[in-house]
Image (cartoon, rainbow, N blue to C red; front, side, top):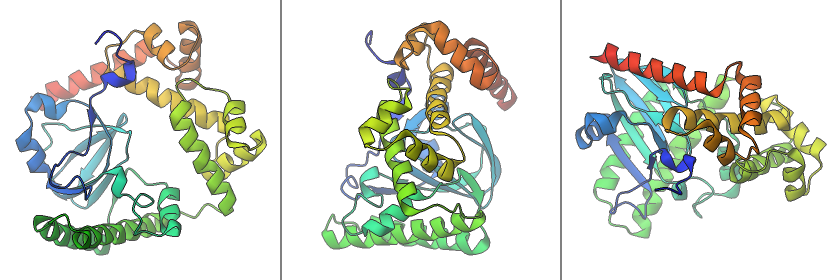
Length: 308
């Protein structure tokens, strides 16, 4: 398509199960996915539009999420958030249990879940990959089996939806508590977290066109210093660093996963000139966009050769 935006060239995967669309929850094994796709399609990078929880049950290998190759083995929990780009590797033969969650089934989108619980869930900074302790691993597998049985008999009734969603929300909140306890808590006031997450939500909508903190402060009705304080409390970074990091992440995704010129990419990310984008990229990474793309392509080619 001649008018296709660079961001649209990355294959996007949506929650799509006609029987379960109203529920928004699907349980699969990794072998189920392998069996449905060709090796070529299985290995293609994909931007997910749902939340994915993957518990590795045996074996070991690599799973790639936004340019990080995560080493996984039995007990590893991988969490992929909506909008992230993941890549499966056909040579990795570990087994895993997968829970796919449509955004409409996440806390905050379901009336059954209190606004307080939804806020707690949204505020958590999920780790992409961690190793569950025996207790949490058992909790995950037990919930997986219960949900699998309930989804097998799912009849689209309100009762069945409530039952399945409550089971899932309980698991998510237990995982949230477990992940929270892995790190020292960040001390900040509730309004600061609210400000930060409002800023992040607005940034996600406009980062490809608006790079100025002033724009976001005006839209939100906060001062720039208020947003800066919220970002420092939540992420240890200034608001401008958060903005730049989001632009850079998208630039890397497009450079690696799309056939796109630097000029086209620069324009799609709101830079008036390709030279300005190149300076931005070099300042943050120490290399040029073209060299970064070539290095990642070389790594992927080397991985395929090793697999064969």
